[in-house]
Image (cartoon, rainbow, N blue to C red; front, side, top):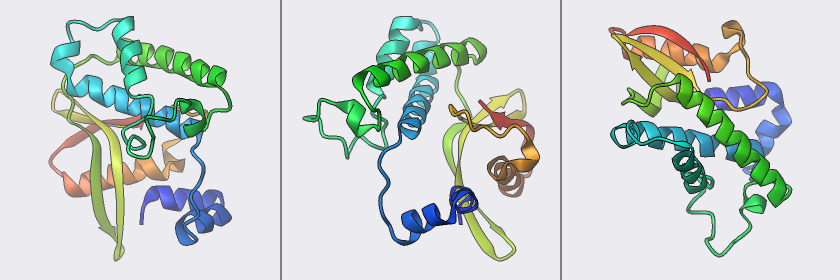
Length: 193
């Protein structure tokens, strides 16, 4: 089981059936494309923190957004001959795509004004735990180490953020999984960015 699958089922059983049982592929969503591009950009910057720690500016950030605009997950599927990335990524026009790039730039500029560019504990950390005889799998977007504590972060660039921890299956699962898998590590914070 995965929390994403459970969330989709709770949101709409018909969508769950179409996607996971009938295996009907969904068209790319501009929201998902946008989020994945920003996650790849963030991960690249943190993984190359020694390089970007001293020379990080608006131009570099814009170049990196362009580099990861077609996220790593979609690169194989995307044809370099296809010049219109906006259609492939689910945008309605080049104008809308540019608006999202501009929005992404502002988001990441704020993100890195708050988060210091330094090595992180990890990104896209696969987790698998057993609960009541069932195996649950997932990936933690970002784990940050601060002093001797860990901060679990689920990157969201959507308007549908659940701020109430009690209502978030995903954050609850991350916390449970880390307590089972890494009981000696102290988790000081868990949340969205």
